[in-house]
Image (cartoon, rainbow, N blue to C red; front, side):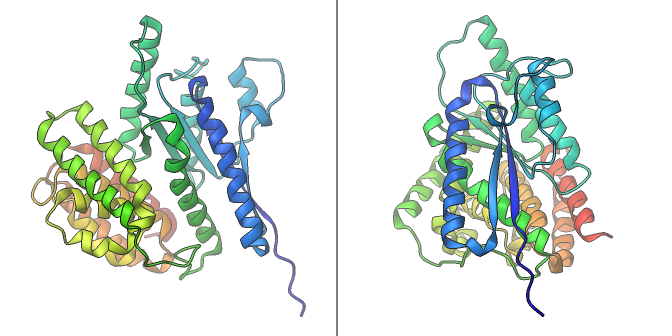
Length: 354
């Protein structure tokens, strides 16, 4: 029997942001075009295309408030949600603090009932001038929303507008890989690209510097929101370097340096690996073997593993989550780790059942 032609597949990426990050929106448009060009050249047989969904290209003038028009004209059937904020939350809507926040809540509500959309939210850490009263109110809204999302394990940070593409590229490619793997249900399709064991020495040197920077931040700054945001920014930079140093994962895990072990977790957030699940679960022994920030990022890596590893690993995923939850409950006042692990358990039940 003649094989039927492979059906084309369009992955839709919805971008939500206020008006102060137009550079990031354009960078995401360029990145989408670049990935499409690579797919067309290297894997035309895949018939896969990315479509960036945004109000600039997917809405037209209509009656109603701007957000009402967007909600009405853009169908909530996208596969990936990417949110971006800097110093503004945006214009309030009839139901929420801003259009961007309303769009996130719509996406998150849909995500609760299925595996779509994959959600990523990025915050820009580029310094700003001293704000006036109105700008200060907007900035306070960003801080509150960022703290809310950090408890869900959905946030990333990047240092400047110009750096956005570098930081979002890895997360976007990982989301694409996970979605295609979920659709194919292939038990061994762990990666889209062949794994390389080469090590970028320059990237490794930068990552070691980041590990030292993390340890310096923890040692010199008092506990609180500013220190956590600094450490989160360092961790985001580690994730950007992860593809170039992933061959060093096992070596990093064995290090006596907390910063280097954090780098191992950054690699596992980008590249889930079933052989390292137990090591991740053990990172939740806080503050016995690791600090809570490391435990939190390990919990996020376990959530990523639940989303990205094949279904034949359900048993090992369940065992790792059970171990992580037991360890995390020894520090119940630090609820962020427990919240992320609870999300991972819900996702595991959705994918694997009882």
